[in-house]
Structure formats: structure tokens, C-alpha cells
Image (cartoon, rainbow, N blue to C red):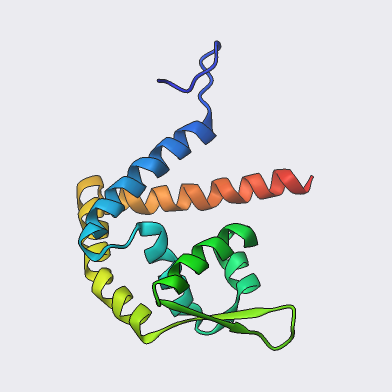
Amino acid sequence: MDPRDDAGLACTCSMVRRVARRLTQYYDDALKDTGLKVTQYSLLSCIARAGQSSVTDLSDRLELDRTTLTRNLSLLRDVGWVRLAPGPDKRTRSVELTPSGREMLEAARPHWREAELALRQRAGGDVTAALQDVLVQTVAAVEAQQQQ
């Protein structure tokens, strides 16, 4: 179904969501042998890059609301890939990868990398770089509009 109105104006949000669903399926398929979903891979990667950090910091980095992030972290904690601990004060919790989480991330990384490189080769490196630039610019435009 084409997400256009009667005047032919395409809905940017619908188009981006459709592409996001398709890309998620693509990366999930690439990661299926590891048992990870791309959302879990992304979260583990972010935690690895951040080191020990607070849930609030991760929420800001990922631009996820805390409730969604907490639910996703609980799933990763339950399988033993992350550790949640009290933070420096009673209002915060810190998050870090466990050794098992690091092993899972390292096992999944080649699968993700292969999928990423294949996508860039098929679409063209210039196209994927331009897409990423356009997405960053689009988010900046949305944020500027919201601040008005």
C-alpha cells in the first residue's frame, strides 16, 4: 500500500517505518544463528561502547524511553548478558555487560558485519552513506521543528 494522501503527498513517517521493518528483518535474519535480534545486538553494542553507565545515560544515547529500555534490559539480564546494579545514588542503576554478554556480542559481530557489508555492496557505499546523512538531517529537522 502506497502511503500517499489524495494529493499524492507521501507520508515520510510511514515510508521510514516500512524501511525500518524491512531492514530489521534483514539484520534479524543475518543474526538468526546467534539467537540475537538486531535490537538486542544494538543494545549490547551500545552498552559495550559506553562501558558501565546508567540506565538514564543509555536511554539518552539510544533515544529510547526508560520504560522500553528497562524492559529490554530485563530480558538481557534474565539470559545473563547484562548486569544491573545500584548506581551511585538510590535513584540510579548502572548497566554493564557480563562476560557472557561480551561473548555473545563477539559471536554476533561477524554476522552483523557481513550483513552490513553486503548491504553496502548491493546498495552502494555512496547510497548507504547518503542515506545515513539524510536520516541524521531529517532527525535534526524534526528536533528543530519541535523546539519552535
